[in-house]
Amino acid sequence: MKAKTFELEKGEYAVIAEYSNYNDAAESEELTTIRTHERPRPRLYTDIATLALRAREYYKLGELPLRVTKLAFSENDDGRFVRLTLEDMTTYLRILPARLNRKVDMKPGEEEPDPESPKNILLEAVDLVENRITEYLNGDREQPELNMKPEEKPEPKQRGLFGVFKSKPAGVNG
Image 1 (cartoon, rainbow, N blue to C red):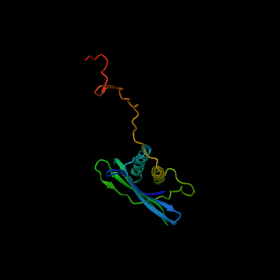
Image 2: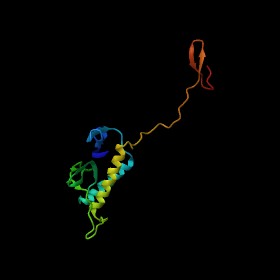
Image 3: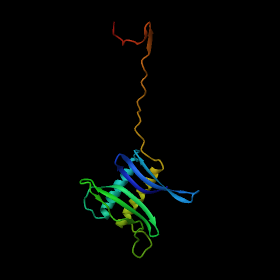
Image 4: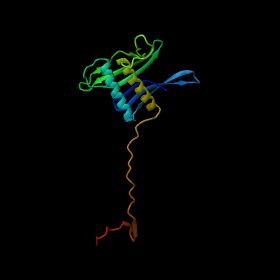
């Protein structure tokens, strides 16, 4: 299962996601879209908030309070790409940076990834969020709050001449 697009809090839905599955019988990719009220686990929200911070640093957007509202993943002969849709939380303006090639930056003259490269730091956050999205699509979702109160047993009813009536509380005459 590969995520294609993932949107949080879109209209009345908690998540709108588009993903593809490879169908062995048809030997093709099947594209599926879900619109659901099922919220992701809190760790996905935390990782998306971290991704927004990394994007703000990478794209040099100053101190804007940003959030990621949509991620779009794609692949072609040129490599793997991600496109982020960012939103300024004070003005609600959308920021649409160009799609980002997910090829990591290498250290100059070496064959190792550069751990201090802002692009590589952003790509690590993208990879983590992509993994969390895959977990979500596979059913790892926030469970609704369950009522943990023990069930109250109804008061015993007594049978009288004219039907069923409740017993009087202790100390009540009449």
